[in-house]
Length: 119
Image 1 (cartoon, rainbow, N blue to C red):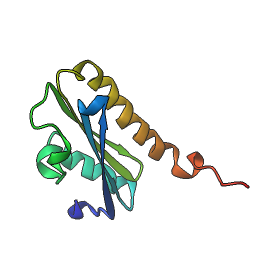
Image 2 (image 1 turned 135 degrees about the vertical axis):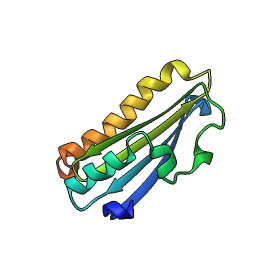
Image 3 (image 1 turned 135 degrees about the horizontal axis):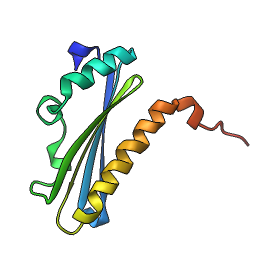
Image 4 (image 1 turned 45 degrees about the vertical axis):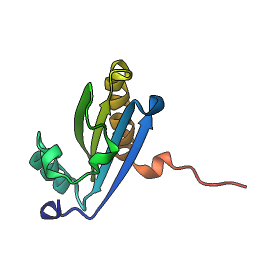
């Protein structure tokens, strides 16, 4: 992603439903929305091969396994979800919610969603 001017990246790992569902979310920050869009285009249908992520944070074999990628202003969010047969029925909804929640956070602007601490 350095070719697309990626400034920072972070990877988060989640488990749900007693470990029957696992998710990895990669968030990449870019200096401009055009850089973000260019990176998203470059990764279209190739994020699994072209982004390094901890595969140990996902199931080795799974009943549900998909990757969603979305550009949100200056951030690119990649969400990978795998689930075994016990959580397969819940995986698509979980996946959509996780991707959308993070995307809305960046799309709406972090400052609007943060609350100042009061005493």
